[in-house]
Length: 73
Image (tube, rainbow, N blue to C red; front, side):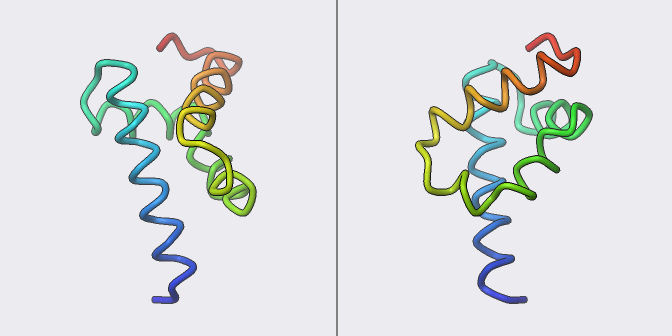
């Protein structure tokens, strides 16, 4: 596996864990929620920009993105 793919995977895991902590849910629940509302696909698509921003800012963005798609966390 290339280092770019591994970097992307590590960053997505970090985002899911941070989102889970902020939302007071398990990491598995956070993963399912983010996946259901398309946030993980958005992160994959925009990784080049997102990884340069703060983790807190990205978690807020994920929360807002999911809420726009009908999420309630």
